[in-house]
Image (cartoon, rainbow, N blue to C red; front, top):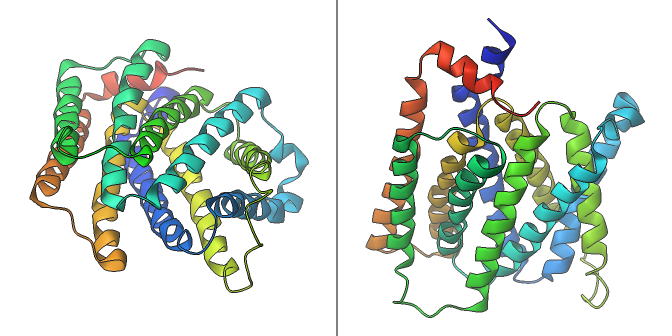
Length: 303
């Protein structure tokens, strides 16, 4: 097996991406719960602080070089900044919107990722995958039914979230395999702590002892999700993996019913089936690509 084919493993990549977004969806549900009693600024800070602390606990085993071992620290810090903006905006929005509706709007991120991957990463996207993504986008429109509901500021926050997360996704892919996962996640946490620290003044009293277990789980889920996504994007093209963010719609619907006693209507269910079907079709198309083409695709990514 060549090095290129070794790094192009779509089934593994898809599994990692689905697991990562499952962690993110669980985190979103807990953030919405915590947002009922705690300021979003404090939740965001805790999300990054726990992430940062978890990495520091393993620092003695890995060494300082593992935490700052990347050759592109500025690039990784900027990448972390885009994730921070996405995080604070989405956390704020889901305290005002149902989880399923917010998740549906963020599905713009995979659409943007596909276009940006063609423009900046020079990835090749076939007409069938473009068609599947377009079909998935149509499903999003079915969910949102634009013009039939009044847009609130929270809707625009989620739209901005989609854009910032799309940029973050492309930067993750562009980082390639040159930077260790530990260094990448450490810079993300450090950037998030710096950004959220500026938002803490005036946010109110600090969380009580009873709040910290929930905040700790939020931070650990964020760390697990990012590690899974970073690993996933190392094994397949961003344009292939982007539609699998749609798994969040299933989790958002489930958590909305289980925790918040809300269920999406029939049109939302139809749209969800469309976007998930689009993701599954893309996976089926990729699984049928011949090994030589898979190797070429794996070799065409940034070095």
